[in-house]
Image 1: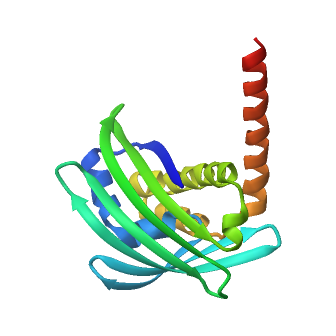
Image 2: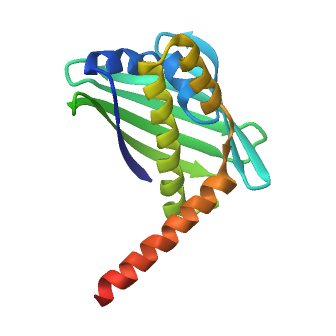
Amino acid sequence: MRLENSFEVPATPEQAWELLLDVPRVVPCMPGAELTETVDDSNWKANIGVKLGPVSLKFATDVKREEVDEAARRVSLSANGREVRGRGAARAKVESSLAEANGGTRVDIVTDLSLSGPAAQYGRGMVADVSSQLVGRFADCLKKQLEASPAEAQAAVTQAAEPVSGLRLGIAAFLRSIGRFFRKLFGRSG
């Protein structure tokens, strides 16, 4: 499944690039993620927690920086996660790129995501809607990292590290799906 998201941060491309390359600062901004080990300059280990209603999933994830193109301000990461109780897996390739926009920086993220197990049982539309909300939380954390004092930045990371609640996000995604359905329905009849 391919997911595309964009957001803007109030920082120069140079500042945003520096943060984007600092994986130990970026990983904790991912909702439910906790950096557990720095293996070397291009490899890390993290735990990612997701709560889908009454089911809690925890993925032990290997993160690898695959490619860095400084001239184009583009970086590719791969993430391979195994659910710690053997209930599935997730694999992602994430390409992030930066561009100057509106006095700040636009961050474009393209993710190729593959899920197996319980997480894969949720429909494509719901995963896309939930990922959009997660990217929103991720963007808020990055913005705070770029514009806040060190104490405020740490508070943003602490808030982002809370496990993702799929029930709350799922309900919001479901409501957006209904809205899309009605927009299509009324768009066709009008």
